[in-house]
Image (cartoon, rainbow, N blue to C red; front, side):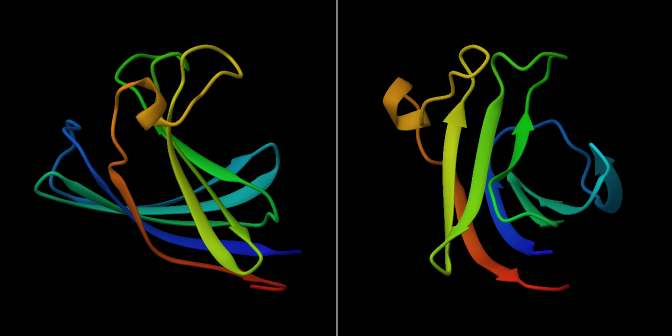
Length: 116
């Protein structure tokens, strides 16, 4: 089993309380660890997940996938990759820059482990 560990920072105008939280949840039986801290207009996130593929986190003030601000992350050849995307329709999520937006996410750290 491989684990991907991420530390990312988002700049935005989300309506979140100044708080810190840590959560564990399961997605299709896979345990994911999610921690976040908000400071000003920045959101610092740590994600841990047992995967060798992409992991994503999305933000939307509506209960729907369309219109979501999507952050897609993976480790490729030992290097962390992060993409800031916008969901236009199911399966259609171009980079923010391609639809007039901007990259407002910064990857600080990413690594992949055989066992965690």
